Image 1 (cartoon, rainbow, N blue to C red):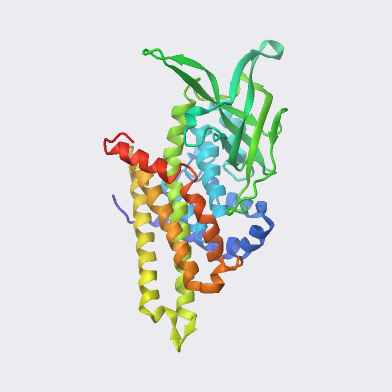
Image 2 (tube, rainbow, N blue to C red):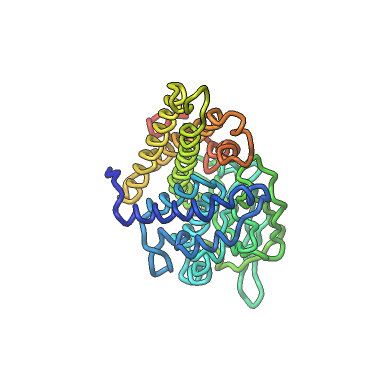
Length: 393
């Protein structure tokens, strides 16, 4: 693995970092307090080409590699995790399935607005009874005759914790649903899961009120309900019955970008704490000159370095088309724990100021807990790693 970035990747990272510092950071506290996704910032991100980074030019993308997306996500997460996850989920869970599994007609319909940030897409997977156990999905889709001699999918069920699902610019949600059953050789019955594109505003498709979350206040997150929702048969995304395999791959891939987000959060906490330690004067000298504070900052830096190397490695494996599932889980595990630990240490270094919501460190403290839950809990990552070791976990 070569950990050196190319000149192009370094330039991209610097560009997004400058954008994060000059555009995102000054507005972060306001939008966090208002619990509102800043669409103007999302549009500017679209103008920078961030939503199209890892997609081919023929699909309107920038033709960059997946690591480039990760670098952009990390740079944004330093100052605002909510904005970073809007990009990460919008690309990895919203656009990527359409690019990878969509028909020519589906790509032509949805991609032009999605890859330019004029619209957002969501991925409806999680349910009340199907979180870590996605195979327990209860949402159903049945095939019925439609008008004009065609056929339709009729969807019934609900989803929860769905990112980017209720914004004014959300255009489509990919919904996983049970479309049939398969009897195995041993007589057991397995659910057949498929993915279906449901346009925003479809009759019977209801977006519930936004959640009152501990953190990620700016990120758009809603429960979704599907009551006799009818969409054309051609809205099936990918092959019938391949939904489970397809979204598992999407989650494996997405964990690399999620690890980049967590690394950015850990880096942001380090930068804020280091800046404060150099300027805060106690007992006649800055607190950074005290060994305990210096050692704490050193551990924070080590966590960031370790997390970054882990997601670089997973991204490199993905780019070289070699197995990366376990490495993606390791990156997600290490980086999320680094973000939580650095948020705790940074808040402690700031003392009382670290307990004020206007302080970016306080926001990271609230935001970082979900990094150990979203896109597969810590326990799920440990299970995947254990299985990679040949253990039944």
